[in-house]
Amino acid sequence: MVDCSSKKICFLTKEMAEEALVENHAKYSHKVGQGPINIYQCHLCNCYHFTSKGEVHPILKDSKTQNRINKLKQGWDWEDKLR
Ligand SMILES: [Zn+2]
Image (cartoon, rainbow, N blue to C red):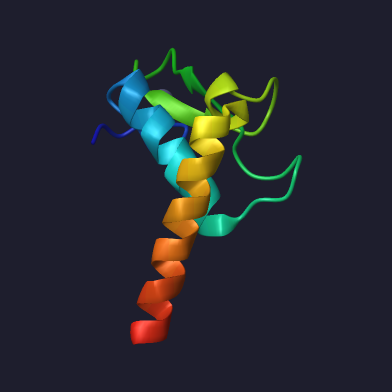
């Protein structure tokens, strides 16, 4: 992890940032228009950060991603029940 003066989480690659974005949506069940919706490359640290502004990342609109988010949510529900 690289420290950025923007104090945001840094992702070293676009792929890592996209993966984290999907997991973030699964974990926090953001309503439409809330939470991070896209990633961008930072001019300060050259890493990728989440952003809540601008266009929704196409990966979040993808039906395959939606299925994954639902599966991840179900997985986490199970973990809660087993605790
Ligand atoms: Zn940065």
